[in-house]
Amino acid sequence: MPVQTKKSGIVARLGNRLKQAHKEHQHDEIKFSTFGDLPPGMSGIARLVDVKFDQVKAGKDNAGEYFFYVAGAVVSPEVFTDKTGTEHLVKGLRTSVIENMFDTPGRSRETLSQHWDFVLNELRKLGIEPGDVDDITDEVIEGWCKALKEIAPTFRFRTWAGEKQTTGQYAGKDPRTQHVWLGLVDFNGATGGGTDTQDDSGIPPSVNGRQHEDEAPSASDSGASGDIDADTVEEAAGDEVDLEALMELAKGESDAAGVAQNKLLDIAIGVGIPEAEATTTDTWEELLELIRAAQGGGEEGEAEPESDEPEVGNVARYKMLDAKTGKPGRKAVEVELLTVDKAKKTVTLKSLDTQKPVMDAKTKKAIQVPWAELEFTA
Image (tube, rainbow, N blue to C red; front, side, top):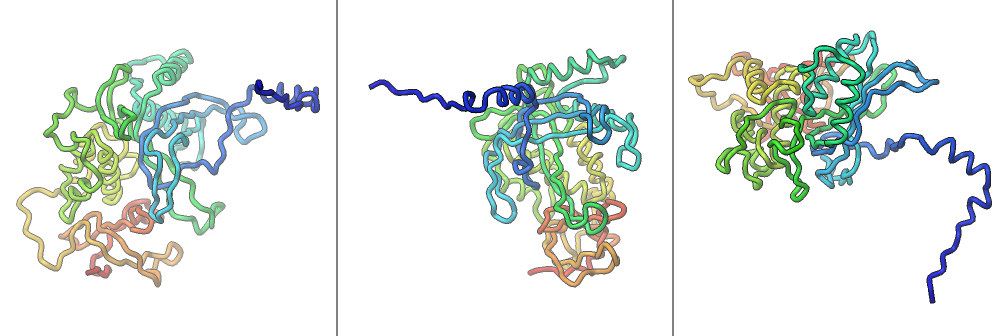
């Protein structure tokens, strides 16, 4: 007996009202639920799905002003497990960057020039070379957007969230997840890994906006093997942090590269390098030099540490400073030592609860904590 197809009857029932509603909304843009936001603390690979310069719609603040929007859909990993053990299905969710294209007094970037500088940097991370264009026109901008959407490159990204605010209009609200794009990476789609090598897309390889060497790494190079995992990164970032090894892993081909990149960025922020500067250096070598300069050298020939001196990677307990009083709180939290200044006997820390460097709320720089204030665990 043939299958019977039953008509829904919805159009016959609703008639012209449904037809009119369809006309009103048939060209609407896709709306994404905020419940589909990516969780903080993850790193992954995404494929670009949209890039445009659009205008704020009528009826909203700054209506008619332009803004820049670029988005990618996560291709790896499929599942992310956060620090509480909760699993998040993240494949297909969006990572996006939005930037105003008008003056915003009082913001971290106030002028159109500063906003445009930020936008050009994001475009450079995707392979665009704005330095080749002397006269910016609508045609040039539209050409960039069209080319990127046609190529649909893959790139690394990471997410993070700040501390919950205690004052102001956002007091008591969960902080919004921030997205940082780290540059192009080839994605084979088979193992969830990626390679920082040139493909036939016409866009040069880069990670974190960094151009890489013309030659692909050999199998003997650090980070070239697909078998390298997060444990390798932790070994490279042991009690005595081997920054050279971390840098090589960050330039590698496996998922460990993303872990190593995040580790280097955490160390950079921990020694007081602004995140905007840390994520926009031209090479991983340059970031390494910034870290060493912030640490005060790190050259060979230094005296051996005394047995009671702490080391990078040590875990301790620390009473965080209260944002209002500036005094230590009652409850100590577990922290990891990011850097150690043996001359000043101070350290910079990362909270093991938030996985973020311990920062000064006013200066937004890492706090130099006397190690005498720490309670070291066995």
